[in-house]
Amino acid sequence: MSRFLLGHFMPPVWLLNLTTVYEIHGFQGSATINNVLNYHYDAYATMQSDHNIYYYPAPGINFNLAL
Image (cartoon, rainbow, N blue to C red; front, side):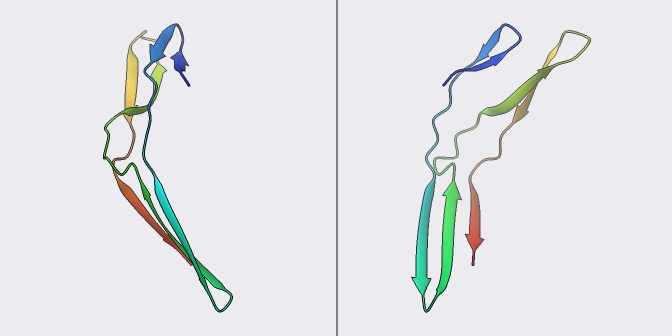
């Protein structure tokens, strides 16, 4: 999937995300690790009225626990 910004292509990004789900006695919990390889990339970019493109970095590796 390519990403496009007003005539400028942002390179495609492939990430590794892991999720595991556990259920016991009717309760469910999950643990997720996003961006396991800690790849640095820009989540999105904007072009302002001054015609400069501003890039916004995506978060690195992050974790989520849910019950």
